[in-house]
Image (cartoon, rainbow, N blue to C red):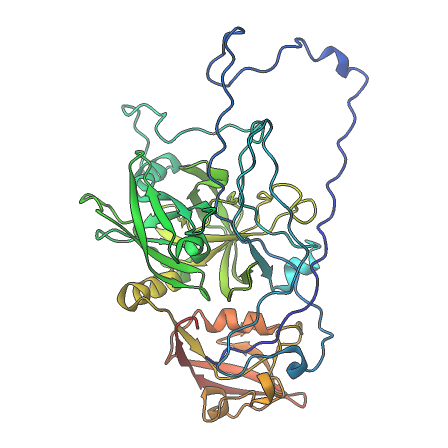
Length: 484
């Protein structure tokens, strides 16, 4: 492949500490009326027979959170391990260990989490806005007290005789929930590590679309299952995975005959301010519905798993609908109930590197459904993804001025594929690509995010600077098949 990159090598700064709680006023002592412990929200247990603590659910598959980008001062591209014109974008910078998830009270040992995604939102607005530091996602081991102060309503609690008006959130959710599944992934290792994520019905044949990082742990000898909102569970198998796009397709074994695929919308027509509905299993709480709006479009987001796997890049839809670990792979719907994105990443103001569970602060990111649909079709047809490329190696650390074509590629190879798309368009080492298909480009990762929204064979207009002089040309995108 000819994706363009430099290895990133900057440690992620820690997120700012949470503000201390405001002390109570002098009049506060009169408030607590009873020393008794609060009862469960729906029923009170008899004093003589307290309820047994709930069993911690399977940790959710992560929602990849963004981190700050690397600084612009870097060594020469070749010294930093730039990939060749046919190489893969490098893994994100090595960061401190995220730390283990919270330990449940009592003698029961906490479940182990899967390797998390470390994401980077490569866009100036987030960095300039002071969202400092990076957070990983943590596969949650739910413990007693983790949901204190929150209320979760099951999708089946409303009386069936109470009808909701068409177009309301309740009506859209009621129609969509039967087509959304909670995915349990378990590795084939002796310890059987795994996690929980979300997916949605893609077709009547039993194909389910989700994130690659949801099912990656089960891809080699592991097990998968999908549970519908009615409680029925089916075994599943991986059909294909696209690490670069962070999209995967699994298929139900012995799929039921009454599957109803979710309708797909048009993510290109989504506008900022449009209503959104997210469905998933945050922290293992299946069939959770949250709402928000489209906060922004075309957010460049890069993520990579903590195990040294391939990077993924997306030009994301940003939403303030609450998205948390376990929402990964779930649908982001528009007001009509059509899928416009796959929930994949969050930015969170977590306290430090994984010392507490990360949660939503209203900065969620979804893979646009138009891109995800193209990838899903490729995976169902061949089992392998196809990536568009320009045949150039670019610096992945400098940002703000554009994507700089490196002087050399990996191991001293040419940074431009001979007779490749970029070379045919007249680009040379040192050129700075500033726009791609009328999108402003501020870095190498941003360029890749935009390239991967297209298909091989697309002809795209680009603007680049050489010796300070801007030039506009066109590039016909090449292709690379597979993740290897």
